[in-house]
Image (cartoon, rainbow, N blue to C red; front, side, top):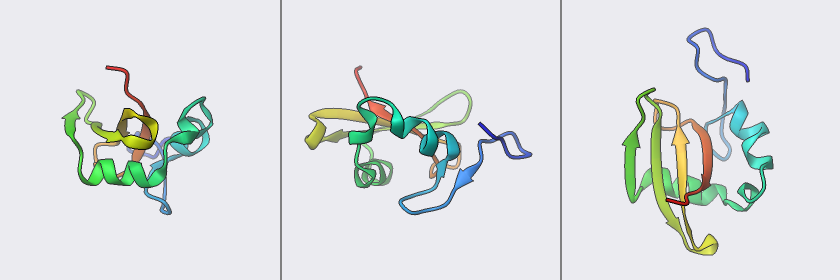
Length: 91
């Protein structure tokens, strides 16, 4: 994963949303994650059921996705808009 001079992962611009290279190149290829619709990710960030800031500054957003019959957790960088990870939440 390449980092910017500030130590953050490199961002890729929309569409569908700001995301890290890690998200674009690694996360979407993991089993089960390719089924997470980018529109659901955008919706969860815009209107989360729950939200929490991690100690490293990144932000976790949770939202229910009916098509997956599951909660999905989306992790953004500290800016709250650059998606770094997304997965079905098992908690």
